[in-house]
Image 1: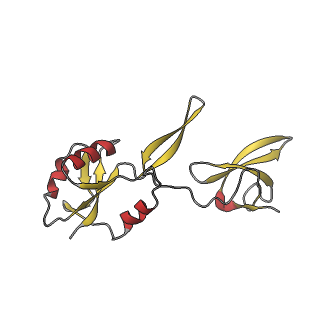
Image 2: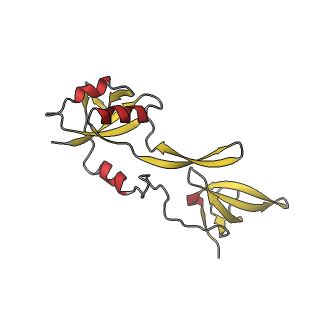
Image 3: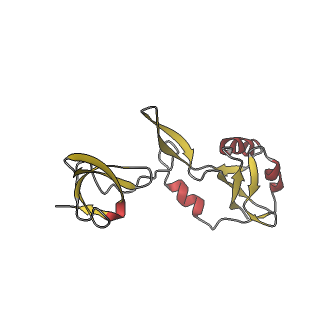
Length: 167
């Protein structure tokens, strides 16, 4: 019976392992997302693995020559116990793949709660009850607020669960 298994790759070896596993006719899945990268004052977007150093392979351990995976270039090992791979629970990979957009990238954008310019109130911490203007969300799901502090506008990053809209 076919199951999805997890393959642990060498550092930055996801693409190499994927290409070599596909060449051996293994059914594989490498979920990727679009990551913002800032370099030299430029903002670019690059495809990155959703789970760095991991990819998925679908196999039937009873019928397929799966041990060849261990000697595949780019592969470190398969996740399991005593050299025996452990299957993922049913539906895990399928759930991830349903979040893919038309470009084959997993969409990590959650429902947008705030729009640029929204007034937000800080609910706890050193800046409790301060009101700021929503600027954006950063890569780690923190809210970037513009606060008027000491006579100037200051950018402050706060966990999203610590702010609410202010009417």
